[in-house]
Length: 458
Image (cartoon, rainbow, N blue to C red; front, side, top):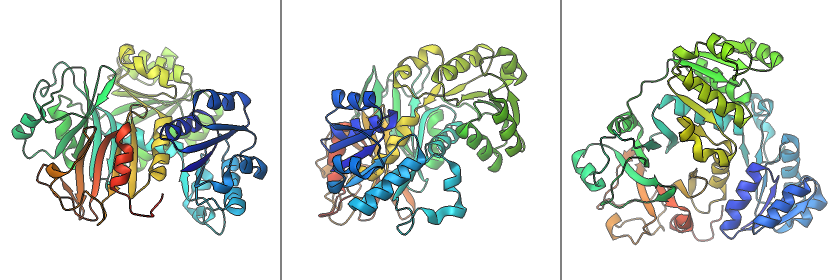
């Protein structure tokens, strides 16, 4: 596949890194010579210095032969124009744009992004994607990661196995025998900085992070079996009243989740503006690193601090301070992957990587075959993929135990006729089933082939 990426920032670089590692033909455009040089030096991709919306720059990057353009610069208008030019002058089949300003995304203007107007096939809103991720994590205390698949009937959760975890040192096949009615499957394990797909004879040990695919209605039971029975947060402090913080607070009000919310915002004008938009949320003007402000927010009596500023260091320090002052838990937004390795040491319970969330959304449309959803795990070491099985798929019609599947791939769940199906060796996949699969990075191509139709290309 030939892909042109406009924007070489964290998201653009991450997408280019992933696609180039899979031997796609990748060209990256950015106005920053230093960012373009980093692409040339570190990736098997071509870099071009220039404006991503200008026809001559797109032509030089190979837009005439491109299968897809992914516009993820910092400017919505540049992203939109780049897609328009790619469509009008180069007839690029698939156009993806990152759009951050919420005014463009209001339902009233939904006809703007259409073939007749602004021809963008896929719109990615990082703030909305990350905001929804934060809401899912708040709703599932004890989960280090949580993603929904198959019309929200299937959930993948990442669960830390602590010393008191009841299911450690027990072979997975034995767990199946002990809990035959539990609709959950362990599909991946992160241990000592390595990720692997477990076999039925493997067992979890303290310190592991288990990736479990479960029926939505049994996620809380699954967390409880792993020793995580934390109650939902009733008192939440949000540090950062930007787009994400405001979205989370507004959605919690809208969904009547019942939690008492306080937002701390450092910018006075922004604090005033968001206080006008929020009905039942207290907004405090000040720094999330100011103990006086944290005390005013009743941090010592709070269940959860959610740090959502644009500054990783502020998010980390605010999370650490909140714990020291008596807050029971924290959830931290971290853009820099270098910080993620020592979060546990600092006392950070869980973090969200906005870049990973955005890249996962893009990969859903890059993957060949009937791929409905993709979630990237551990900075690309694995992916959880939801795909639709077609009549021609080699998966259809045979018991799973008879399929020649690679060891670094595991089927976690099947969605059939609106219902969850827990897979076992005798299960047969049918046409139109939606299958949730955990695949190590080197098995992703195999998954694409399993769900790909001849001459079909996405």
